[in-house]
Each structure stands twice: as C-alpha cells, then as structure tokens.
Length: 137
Image 1 (cartoon, helix red, strand yellow):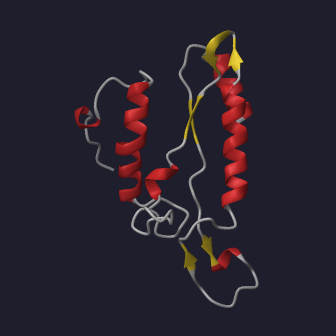
Image 2 (cartoon, one colour):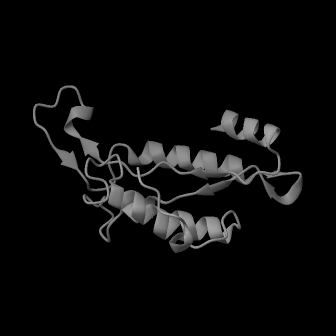
C-alpha cells in the first residue's frame, strides 16, 4: 500500500487518493487444513478480526501523517466495513455469502452507503449516484 500510494503521489501529485480498509472476514472451515467439516462462520470477531484491525489501523495512521501543509495528507483512508455488518456485528450473509467476498448486492450497498457519500464529501465526485450512466457488463 505504501509503495503504491508513494508512486501515485510522485507521478500524480495533485490526485486525490482513497485507500479502502480491509473488509471484515468470517471463518470458513476450508481455511483450516485439518477441519473435517464444512462451515462458514459469519459471527464476529473471527480469527481474522484482530490482524485485519491491526493492518487497517497501521495504514490509517500512516496515511494520516501530514505531508507538506498540516492539512495535507498522502491519501484518505475509508472504512466501509460497517456496511457488511448486522446489528449483532455478524457479517450479513446476503452481502458477503462466503464471509469473504461481497456479493453484487454487497458492492451496491457499499457504493451507495459508503463510497458515494464519502467521495462526494471529499469533492472527488460531484454527481449523485443516480446521475451516473448505468453500464452493462
């Protein structure tokens, strides 16, 4: 992350850079080689929560250090993980069916509830999501 942000800053110094936090991750039986049963655990915290939180915290701290002017930073750190968590803090199965990768609905919700509002607030985008042309894949 540091190398990519540093290179972007060097080659495109006026660019606004947004770094997304690692999303929450549940446990899957096939993540552990000696597991005899197949399961997906959506509850949090999982065995991955602490390491992911440490990485997110480190990256956020590094990106928050001022460069040049006191209000100028290398990039903006954006954590959209809350979009995928239910009231009980477990991962929503409909938004992240394998407890690791967002579904299409998960990406749509992340875009609508976290990315667009944040990018608009940061003046990176000027149009609301409804004004964007829909692209067929």
